[in-house]
Length: 105
Image 1 (cartoon, helix red, strand yellow):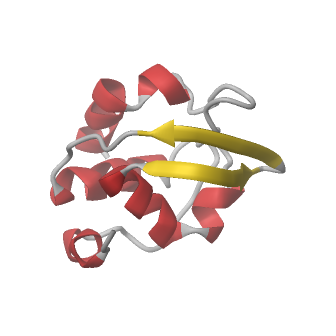
Image 2 (image 1 turned 90 degrees about the vertical axis):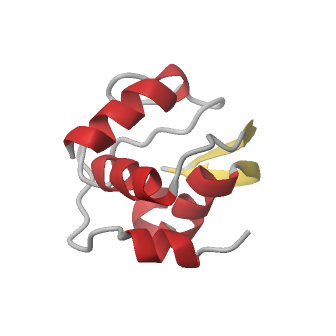
Image 3 (image 1 turned 90 degrees about the horizontal axis):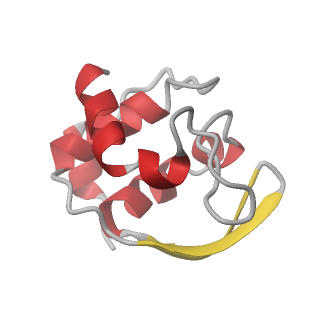
């Protein structure tokens, strides 16, 4: 969680903000995110390869571009575990390096 928090502060906070609240209509919230809970693989893929196109998070449609962050698979696992267990999110299944490695573009 500590390393995930540090990665979040270095790479994610600019768009998704300090408490994961995002900016409505521009950058989706990570806090209390139904998208994260329902789209685990797509969420990991977005961090790993970037994300482009329309998604709906908590009933709001977003259509922006998230560029690839250049993170290693272990860093992606760490930041995903942090995000998925912060700001009202809870995942009882840990994101593993092997899970991240298996996700293809």
